[in-house]
Figure 1 (cartoon, rainbow, N blue to C red):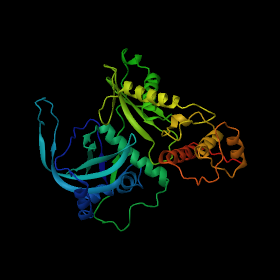
Figure 2 (cartoon, rainbow, N blue to C red):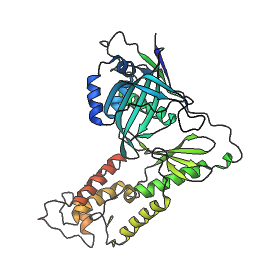
Figure 3 (cartoon, rainbow, N blue to C red):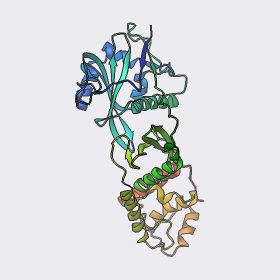
Figure 4 (cartoon, one colour):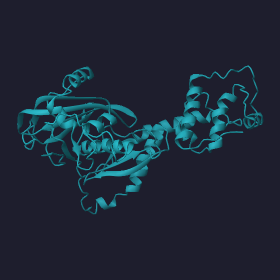
Length: 377
């Protein structure tokens, strides 16, 4: 008999006491409980839509430093009477807890996911926190779905690493369903006035100013009567995760916040950051340079976004040319000799300063990321 695992968006499933508090403790438990039947029950489970991918495979591929452990804890119910205390508690609940590191908005965070095991041989994914900040059930479902999606994308549909035939025969394979997002209700006249394109443009502009990148795309991730959540991602990402973050817009107040950390979005600060960058760039005379500040200031994608493949290659080598480097490619020598500032120096051995080397590496990575390579003759 298969074990059915369900996440209900409406289920009242809060944090459970007894969570691990350190990586060392997590790793010790991970080793000592590697064959625990409760841990194996969850690890060997799989979603109905991914019958050949287990939680163990998806999670341990998606998360860094993954750990699993089992403990007995207390599940707290909701506070429907608003007295500041849970309306009920269930003692002696079997819990399997997973921890691992992932990237959110360019920052590494520690995810903690708890599964509660029920008496009828089922279990619920019941709790998620990122850096000890509790998240809602929608975020939990999204994160689990993301882990399985990326595992399937990287391993193909025919997963050769399916459940081992040597696993404990007493442990049934689990079946798991990723929850559907709550349906968007018919909009009232107030909600219908929301301009989603404008919302997405607004938060993308903020991200571009604050983080110095133009490689951003947006989608409406979730909506209810009070909020709209916008997902930002890098459409050109070649790394494991394209996620740039989730941002929540409050329809009643017009205030934006980070959906994970709860921090308010500071548009004024982002604009100041962008203007400071422009001011810093404007202090450098062009003097025939493509990027006149590339030996002094760290570059961002916004600095490179308007350059062609050829210009990017010239800009990368421009950093060497400032020192008089004599190039092997005649095209580069001809180009830099045509500028007003280039002075050949055959004694220059190619050694760059820290910021110069970082910028050379950054431009090269940018060219590879967007397929903008150019080979001078």
